[in-house]
Amino acid sequence: MQTPTSLLALALAAIAVSAPVSAQTPPDPVTALVDQLDLEKYKATIKGLTQFGDRRQGTARNRAALDWIEAQLKQHGCTNTERLRYEFTEPARRNPAQLQPRRAAGPAAQGGGTLFGPRAPIGVNLDPLAQPDERLRALNAELPPLGTGPRESLYCTKVGTTRPDEMIIISAHMDGLGFGEAANDDGSGTALVMELARILNAPGVTTERSVRFILWNNEETGLNGAHAYVAQRKELQGIESPPGSGRYPEPKWLGVIQHDMLLFDHGMPVPKLDAAGKPVLDAKGQPVYTAPKEQRAEADVNVEFQVNSQQAEASAKLAWAMRAANEKYATDYPVAVGNRMTNTDSVPFMDHAPAISVRENERGMHIGAGWNPHWHQPTDLYATYSDKDFLLGLNAAQTTLAAVAQLVGARGKP
Image (cartoon, rainbow, N blue to C red; front, side, top):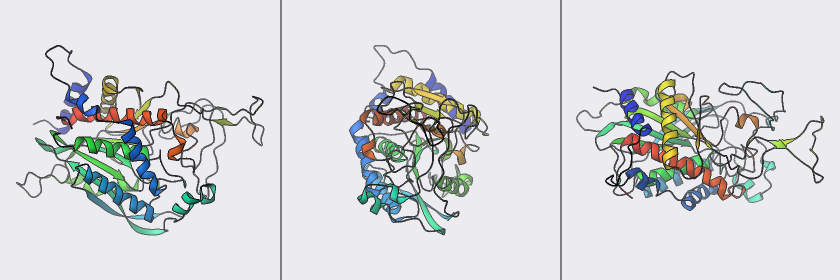
């Protein structure tokens, strides 16, 4: 009997090697699914999420966002929604983070690797008064309570027709931080998962294996929702319950594809210039760096695995399968594969199953070097981003949908 790992390897091989097209080749079912993705629908889902402000964990706006997401999933046909409940203890509230100054080339990046090139300041805005929009400031006014409290993550499952005991997890985190709208971090990832749930749960679409769509909570406080899921459910994988029912509450994890911020790849920070075209200097006389204003033509979708994980080899195969799917089905932006996945909800899974993250930039080398000035800032607003930015997120959706459709044997046209 084949193990889930060997089944995954076979599926990945099928993605990587495509048969030549001939006049007798039937219509590609993957193309039929990917064609259902639409830029305006993707944008509208992100816009819907921003009505709840930054959706910070532990607040009423966070709970309202969970309820709204659940209603949307049910409307899309993913009706068997469930909540994972866990207790969260927040550490002592931090003071506003100090911005990271520019340093000499060569320091280590989070997750491993090295930072190169000029770097802009990074930090987390924890000052509500930094938000100039009074309406949004009022919406985000409630702070999460200190101490232990109940939290929930939301998920729903598309049950496979022939292998319901195995699944691919498609996930993102729905909580944000910074007193903005969390449109990018992580409205863009949450909207991607919701759009894929809409397409794969449409009437007429079937999958051989199961697909679970998960929206994590507490990502911004230390991946607490994902850690709770792994702790509570890893031992339940592949168990039929009740016996003989054909039901598998926790199918085996064939792969975890986690999505985080997806909209902003404007490139390496560049010197900020004054009206005369001269570099702006800080109080110490050092150049001030900032991100370019326009999405760069060579923007890409960054798919990362963690080379130091116990599932590194299988995770790398999954990452390269995403690259192959992107080359065949994405329309505008390519995939770049990296080996330093870090600081996102696939990390708790990486020693238990093939696990990758999908982002606009590499988390350690790029986000850690200030490539996105809106990260955890009041400026993470829907209005901040252009259609070129949203299109990068749509290309990430095309990539994931195409890869997953092949991995789970999806068929049918919505």
